[in-house]
Image (cartoon, rainbow, N blue to C red; front, side):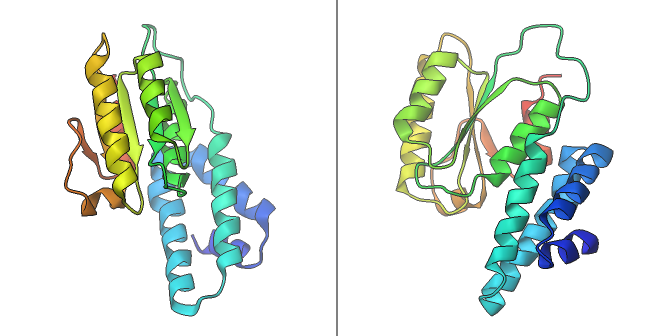
Length: 201
């Protein structure tokens, strides 16, 4: 953690990305995210809140973590039977998508199919994706929480109910704590919990 933090403070993007990538390869996505990336990002966020400085370091660190996550490859063979995808989407006003990228990388590592709709996903786009792909699960991410997230959850639930195959709908992220509606599938409180819930094996 200290090595990556020092490299980030020096704005040495190449070294940050190399060290994060090395941790991902050595420890796997879940361990590297929960033991390295999350504490670093949380620490830089706290530093910015306390000093109103180093936002460039936080942005560089986020970019490097994102770049490393997108290069994660499957560590084993794909499932022998057909597995329906998981749809990963953010709320319509949610710009913080890095945890969704971490979940996508963890699923890719396990050769599990998934669709990432990314930050600020319009409600209609989430609904159409569920309707068109009949996924086995939907995860709606919210860091901040808002009325748009509730609309996205309702739309996903309606599309899931109309699917010819069972679709579980989950929420994830701190933004759901302030909202009273709960997903039928439940709330995923961490990356490790999300992977356990979404891994059909």
